[in-house]
Length: 339
Ligand code: NAD
Ligand code: DAU
View 1 (cartoon, rainbow, N blue to C red):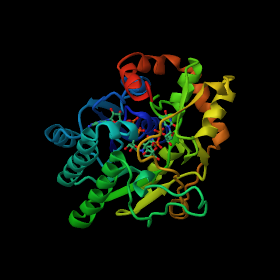
View 2: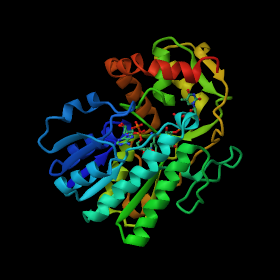
View 3: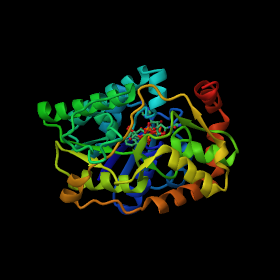
């Protein structure tokens, strides 16, 4: 089989490529990525020369280029990770989120229709459900929870989900959608909470916690997410949405303290800064459907996953130091100075 993986030079997409090449060496993987600030070719260095791997630098909004690639590769499956993924950036500048996350997804699905692709999988997010209150721990997101977005990012992801379901109903396109909770693990871009706190702590820099740090996220080790997508594209039912999450709710402040302790750094590095606009309070996924239909369960406990992640950042300083040395400094200054 040939699988086109878009956004494969980013965090989850690259982990998915490693997972697929390892578990399904008989398949051919074609990675299509624009290499935005979030995409790193160095991440894919170890697989670049594999005979069953091809990298192509391309924008998913480039209709002509995408159609040409589909003509050449005749993919069996397309898995769409390509997206602008950072909520804070979407609050600063929504335009590129609408372009990539909505128009790019539509372009890929048009190509899937034209070339009769057997499956289009849209990698979506639990953020499309909005948030849950802290005082109702009994509530969780199911696939039936209404879409109720908060940020330009989550709205663009919700729009793409609705388009995917519309392409299924209107044109019979064989789509599936996964809505996952917060991932963590290797190759996570250091603008996101966990890698940012690890990198700053290692450099003895302040650890900027938004608001009071009581917001709750449901953390899942990235490899467990990759295994869920692998199951869905091979065994999932078309036209269906699958929630993916590990029953691992944690407050931001507790995560940051845990990172301080694991690295032997003082909690005095923690600084409470102005809250994110429209900040979602709590996410919690009910993964009953994917468990009962496809037998998926998370395999990595948070205590093990976070230790593996911290160890990875300790042993891969080159990877993240290069990222934070360039344009990222301007971004950091803009987002955090005087916050
Ligand atoms: P990321 O920002 O690390 O990577 C995104 C990748 O997409 C980068 O390699 C970037 O170069 C590429 N890209 C961006 N715009 C593109 C375009 N126009 N054309 C081609 N490539 C483009 O993101 P991530 O955290 O790996 O997230 C991947 C997907 O998973 C996203 O769709 C995101 O919404 C979803 N998701 C993420 C999480 C999470 O916790 N990170 C959780 C659930 C769902
Ligand atoms: O739930 C899935 C989503 O998880 C994905 O769809 C997004 O692509 C991904 O970025 C992530 O979104 P979050 O907004 O939850 O992740 P982020 O790492 O940006 O923030 C996690 C929490 O930490 C959130 O409550 C905001 C807070 N935070 C974040 C940063 C960057 C801070 O307190 N300080 C920070 O500096």
